[in-house]
Image (tube, rainbow, N blue to C red; front, side):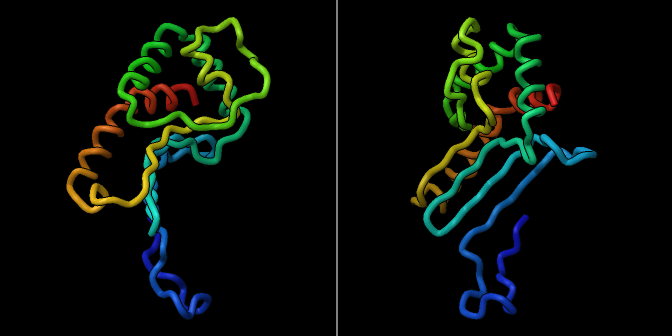
Length: 154
């Protein structure tokens, strides 16, 4: 969790930060490729979701291997996540298709260099009310199976 205050030694004019974050990461021994939930907010907007912290190429390789070795299970998890539509899949895709023969549902994840699942929005009345909590709970619930699949893969 980030601090709400700036270090006065370095920021004389702004004692309160304009940005804060909360992270819940899987505690991995080597700190690499740790799936975790996050919430970030600033004066202009907020975002929350599921990320893979300290990710590297080997981590995505493990995720791809897991998806390919467990196609039916992975496809079910991905389709359930897609149907919920509460978090968007993010991450740079390869310029050329590496898995053109795979199911389109699986390709969306296999063809990425990195992957994360995010809801992002500007500040509105929703942010300041109880509806925000409900929105986050439902979104985090929708990505639960994805989290456990990634945890198993990594």
